[in-house]
Length: 83
Image (cartoon, rainbow, N blue to C red; front, side, top):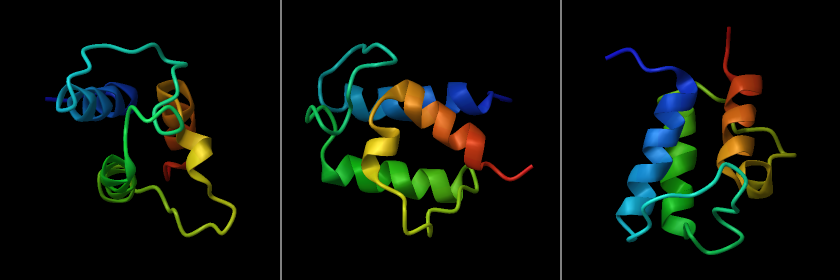
């Protein structure tokens, strides 16, 4: 199965949301600041960004608000994924 990064990101987020009884969201709906995803889910997302997508999160300027929506998460990964 050869998914695009955005499809993989969407699948990961939707899986986390479905575990919490949420069936769908928009690309601009806040994930973390709204409480849809909690700190445990944030840890899972950050771990996946590093291990599955090779995103370096060691930047001191990183803030969870940079990936608070599905659209911003997809953009963040696209801008940080090694070529």
